[in-house]
Length: 140
Ligand SMILES: Cc1cc2nc3c(=O)[nH]c(=O)nc-3n(C[C@H](O)[C@H](O)[C@H](O)COP(=O)(O)O)c2cc1C
Ligand SMILES: Nc1ncnc2c1ncn2[C@@H]1O[C@H](COP(=O)(O)OP(=O)(O)OP(=O)(O)O)[C@@H](O)[C@H]1O
Image 1 (tube, rainbow, N blue to C red):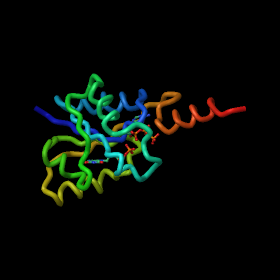
Image 2 (cartoon, protein in one colour):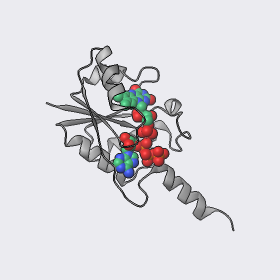
Image 3 (cartoon, rainbow, N blue to C red):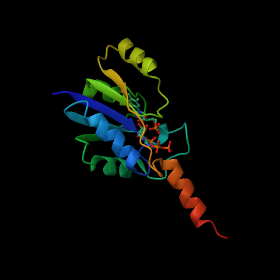
């Protein structure tokens, strides 16, 4: 049984998320998704949707076998528990592949790392959807 781990914030779901999760699932038999904790999303504006609600929506997607909230303090704690064969990185995730490989090796974790490509849809970005809503609802 080959386990794959995908990660992300998944604030406002769109086809790019689905593409990333479908491509991740193709790399193994069981897809586990780690959803970022609200408090850990510091590299961009805080998510609009609370973490439990983001988790519930991700868990309901077809390619997803298991979804959980990430650890608050140690991002490698869920990886130790799941013990995946592969960890996928999305096209715009800030972790470098080699940095992640090194961090896993130092901790004695055996997972390989695969970068997934991007899906080019018109509104395939949570932040672009938020910007579009703000633009359309702005008072004249
Ligand atoms: C291997 C790996 C494990 C992660 N584990 C956690 C975790 O336990 N808790 C958490 O809050 N975020 C975790 N993250 C980070 C988020 O899931 C997400 O990748 C990060 O916030 C970047 O968000 P983005 O999808 O908006 O680029 C992990 C990321 C990676 C690559
Ligand atoms: N258009 C897309 N094509 C492929 N993968 C995507 C796409 N959008 C997001 N992903 C991937 O889905 C995962 C979760 O993405 P995230 O929650 O950061 O959404 P996002 O739409 O990129 O957010 P934001 O627009 O706020 O940066 C990440 O691994 C990310 O690379």
